[in-house]
Image (cartoon, rainbow, N blue to C red; front, side, top):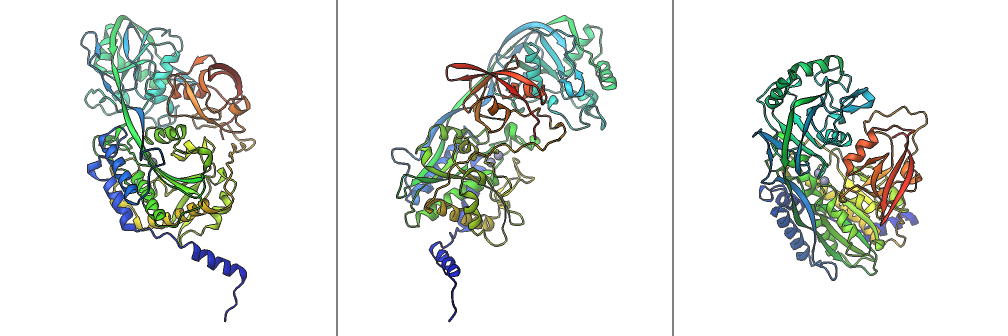
Length: 591
Ligand SMILES: [Zn+2]
Ligand SMILES: [Zn+2]
């Protein structure tokens, strides 16, 4: 008879007590296939198809006999601003063809026009289109993209467009210089093959909800006519800028433009979907995923030429949603756990973590009783067995716990990102001091494109991963010691590191809340050890002024940060409750 060592015996018992969850790849794939079907049209937040998906998820929970959180329904409603459309009152005097941008403010302006080249102020490239011209209360006319764009060796970043070329930054730059409106023309000449002189379709550009300045596009032929009246030639001026990188800005003395822009925003009610398996105590584990995607594309599409076709979002994130559903099914067949399990799927993730952010602001169960939140976003495309598990640094026991759960054979678990920050719903929990783990199978070429289809999902591998997640969740639900939340401090910048060229400016240290307040930037969190933390700024503060400049939204803040460097000390103003607080922040090197 073989003699067992105590450890081997313990391991045997443990294996017996925790039979691995056997998730059916077929059942899993059926959910993915349905959620990513043409019928659900890409599950855009605010669309009727997202509501269809919500009902489907709720009906699955119900079919497993899992009830809503006591006192609630399966669906948690919240409202959000989705998209923008043109109202009936858009006009430019003289019947000039134009199109407003979706992030434009609404209103009427009648003002003289100043040509400001590309509308760029780039201290790092010693280039400023606004030098020497006064645009206060005027309309600025500017050209798309950036100088020397077609030149491999341009003074900017060669053929790679910098942040300065974006609509959003041009809008902020114009606003910061006091302009009331921006009129943009394409740079077909001199940088792009001259196609027809066209206006961009409405709603294709990313930006803030309201940039705080009117923003519209006219045709190049319109701009050329205006130039001719001044005795100038647009092409000549642009060639000149490309040649010596000297701005050629000037007021158009013969022109006053009168324009009205009317943008309307839709407010829609959308839903998170949650179900609860009670445990023997009031503590619980959260297993979540977002179930929305990009619908027919919108400005977040990475296949701009295919906007208007269904972006099915099979991996992003039918794969994680199907995971929540199948884990709910499996746990519903198990004996009652010590702690409860909350299964939740979120809307509005693609628009900026809206659903999870709403949830953590309006939790159905006390957040302090949540021992951990497990998030799955894109788990359907495991390649070479590689799986990322992020966030182990956020809970005192997570490192040990994850190390002690044996991953499926052939899996390589990557734990290198321990912070719990990063672009998916778990971050909404990290900033509320809930320990998190994030499961992710990596980015791929079909990300945010119509080609993210169900047939590319590796269901057998995803099912194996769910078995692994189930075991981690079981441990979190039953281990006597629960993880205590830990903040992962900002890693120290290596000494002697050279100036960053990331283009995002120096380090500040706040994590913005993507659900914009009416004005300013709300901090979802302020990371320990950062300049903002050292200055006493806190989560919940709303930044309204930075170095004497008004901050209306995240773009303004990004812009303000970019125009400073590490070592600068800036005075900022934040709203904290009804108080306005001033703080001096010493900016440091971004790591
Ligand atoms: Zn996602
Ligand atoms: Zn996405």
